Image (cartoon, rainbow, N blue to C red; front, top):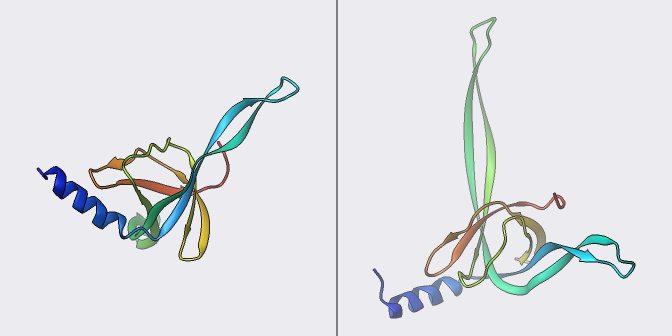
Length: 132
């Protein structure tokens, strides 16, 4: 187990790698001025330091043609994108996360429960295609 001093030093080291910023946006139910109910995007955090991490993986599938018994090996590439961010903030599952890193801004959505560590948290992201 790390001492408090070691955790602080390790967290500082992780945070020194942050080279992006992100805005966390949630979809909230609101009552409009005409008393109707609607939904709107609400930015709950802005310009939060972060880092994106990318991992490519290959999935191999083996299919057998039933008529000829020939084996057909196919593969596809997938990219896993993780957001690395402070463990002190709470990001709700399904939130829209707009990340600016290396001069590019891309909208993602948080796709799962975060893995929370003493030094950071990791959230798997998918491209944002709209609110569900």
